[in-house]
Image (cartoon, rainbow, N blue to C red):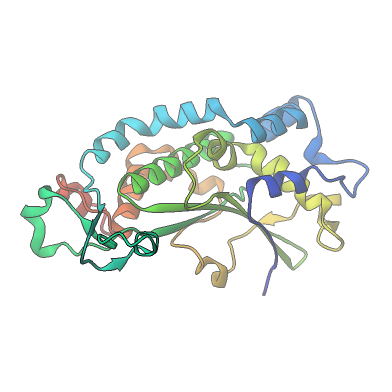
Length: 295
């Protein structure tokens, strides 16, 4: 089945669409009260919109507290690549070439710490890594695993960029309603942009991203795509296989039975190390730990 797709290439584009008038007299995405706080993570729509606009600082701080002790230790073991300019090299820097700078060739320097492992190291240079997170979560998934997964994703991005790579973060809601599939994609962080931890914390680690922002977007779509919102928003599904191929790292929907892998630090850290290895990041020490996640 080929899903219907909507793609927002900027964070502001998604927020602008979410603020369009709902096609329904009663917007569940904008409901207020105690039930909304428990299920959606914010008491009111305005509270959620403020977090989406200004950033979820509390979530970013919790993410740091959860992941940083582990991430800092790994960061010290990452062999960072740096660009070296010279009169010869492997890649041409167009800007330097146009300005007639004689050192207009680029190469990658991996420092002296690699000497011990030179024979089995094949540097790949800087990569653009596209990380796609399916933010779909079953209704019985609590806020804690959503926040924990978001925290580990932020930690992964920090480590990948510390290693010299550039990361793009994309979120997607994939849902099915009466045999009709819909995917709503949104770019959270462009590859060339600095990591805004507060914004990413809201986008990946706050229930209101799914249960307010994405649901609000669904309510603004033309029929029949928005028809599902009258009695619900469909149920979360995985992104279509063909669309998953557009990503370098893909995280699937959250279910109640699969949340333990994010609230268990050992399992979550093993996942993070595995993603680093697959991205070509090399550790200068503790290679035994790296090998332990080669499954």
